[in-house]
Image 1 (tube, rainbow, N blue to C red):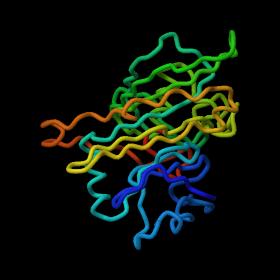
Image 2 (cartoon, helix red, strand yellow):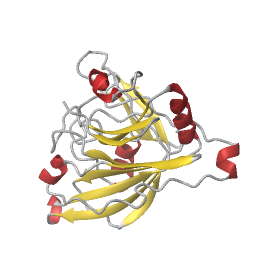
Image 3 (cartoon, rainbow, N blue to C red):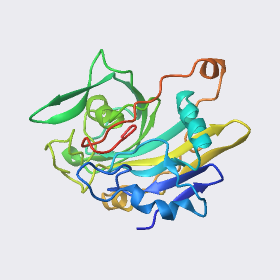
Image 4 (cartoon, rainbow, N blue to C red):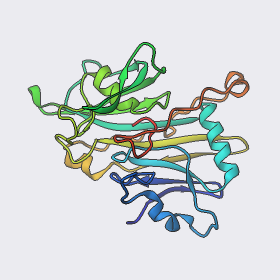
Length: 264
């Protein structure tokens, strides 16, 4: 498997993670990103390390640090909210509005019957996602929409829960929050794509990367949108962010308890 490189310099890589490839090795075994780590060294002695997580099904931009110092700096950039990201998602529904902001606190629950999942809960961790309707196709109850999300926070399954409880429909193909538990109904995977990432760096040019529109999104009938500005707008550094870093984003789980995630 060839892993496309979207950005490269002496301290960072941004790869276009293929859908279906876990970032971390599943507990039950099987393929993982680490299997391709030699390919990603690109002449460096140290293997790159993922700075954040994407769910197994999620494709697109994944930031990797090429040494321990850069890993520490990128972790701090996430804490200081100097990282902006956009995601593309498909839902079988047309929102009533063209854009908006979803603010729903999230909490983890589990049961023997359904396993674990995230739900909206007043006592959960704050989670905020901005969204924009890019395209709708179909008629009547057969409508399908392309949504662009810009998360402000990085909670586990944030965009998946915000789609369901904020927009009114699960992501197409979601086996956890979709209509049939454990099944990718309507699509071969959860239709979520990490479209762009933008990281502000002190004393260096920002890291900006954009992952092309996935072929399976095209097969679902949607059209590639214009790239987002910047490509993903990161908040500008200010005294509050620098003096008092925000809490580290929750980046520790996936559609099954064997991989890690950020928003998806």
